[in-house]
Image 1: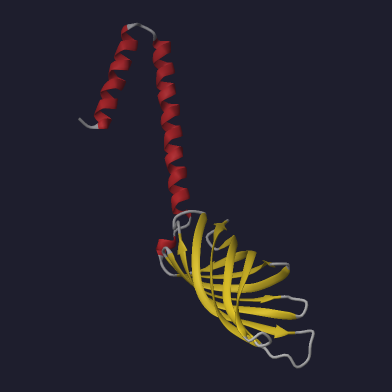
Image 2: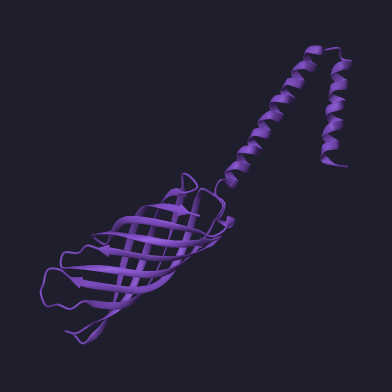
Length: 203
């Protein structure tokens, strides 16, 4: 037996029982309670449906532009991330400038981003990528620009206020290897970045 028919029969029996007792007031109160409950359940379902369909990365390819600022160690950073979104996967191009006392560093990376949700205002994600790290001296003359290949990985989240605007925060770990000409050996360097920014989506 279907659920609707079960509830229908129960509803009918309840009405008949109330009528049999001769209490019209109870019948009116019962019908009013059913009406209010049904309206509340309908509004609740509509709210859930609107929330689920508010933002959907499965609708097709979308592009995001995300300027950001943050910290890498004790140095300030600012940069730009450009990404192409398709469902749970993003392809991201990222560039930034790290402001140091003696030199500035420029991480330029290509990253794969895995979205852990595709139908929500809040989208957590993880990422991994590879790129070029350029260190440019600013306080000395004659020092050479140092370049190295590095990898980065991290995690973060994006929260969308509308279908085209939101905020994002992410934490990244950079790993690279450079040659120390003074000590004639390679050095493994680790950098941590915490970044906060806004994001604009274009479809």
